[in-house]
Length: 253
Length: 239
Image (cartoon, rainbow over all chains, first blue to last red; front, side):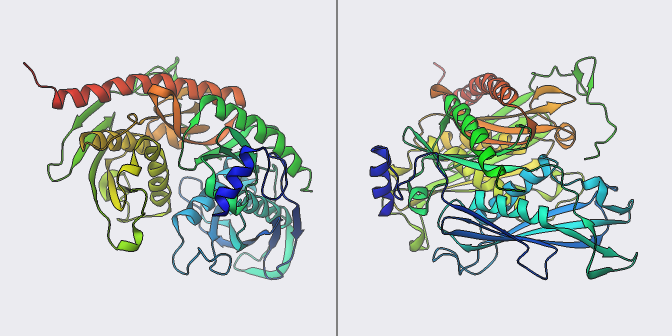
């Protein structure tokens, strides 16, 4: 219902909360809030709220990358965050979100994985990024990607005595080299907008999520939504994402 | 990432002898599963996908029905024997995501609103995998939908592209995919030049993305002709 109202407004060049098409809601970032995690962040885009945490473990590396750490990204759309989320195994949308965030971090070479090797072929650090949705008011993907990045920047590697991890004592910061920023640009009729609200998400024709690295390289793309995009749309969206990602990156120290 | 030591380009040619912008040998056949309403097999080199369509058919349980439109459901699945190291049967996170993007790639082409309360089920099975499985699956699924007589705006045509050793290439093999600097999955409806699937990961600048999309568009034009030929071969009445 509110979707139709949002669509009416967009056709008149306005948005349901009064923002410009290419304006984010107020973005709030808070770090280091979970004591039991080695890195954590809470990110809000307006009322949308996501917590991401980093936990470490030591285990065997994958056989094809014996001298590199392992990254595992997981997302939970907890039933407390929306009447549309239900308890149970992760939904298709949660899995897709986690995999898109994972690809952005991985492809941008954000974490120096080669510095996470303890003993080649035997022991490496596992980096677990767990995304917990607290309130879904739209644009979970961008909020989750940002929360994950901030949590990684906040993360400290615990001490490891060769046998076990000594929790609560730290060795060094997690080596993070790049900051991938995800910007999802939505197409509604012939309009492009960023940071959709829940109402706007109902009426989005197509969406392209673009992950941009510090040097302007694009590290991941994911088209979403039920309708198609033209070649010109894709170019336009990438241009918007390149511009808007800079704005978010400035907020991340 | 520590890349393996394989050299993927020798004298400008790929390990299977292809040029960067060359597709593998492609085979297509429709109507390969007689129980299904529509079906197709598509081979891109060693990658083999079979797709079957059931429906439009009544959708149960009833609460899944949509009053004003039909529901498209897709399942992408890899056979345990399709890969070198046996894959555990059943859906994993990767195949769940791919099922979703295949559905979104096909949906814009189908007149779903003509089938309220009904479901169209698309099942894609990868029986042999050598890279580019999702796009091979989409090509098969699109043919299966067409042969099932599902009204469509256009066929959906898909191909993969990527970057290896600083060279942009089309139609990645499994080995190329595992060692690529970037890879892209792409699908479009050729007649109106509309993109329905776009996924990429790696490191590319804007120009490279544009170039890859242009390469995919050109390749899709060729694959489109093969799809139409495969349908004609089955249904054309020879006088």
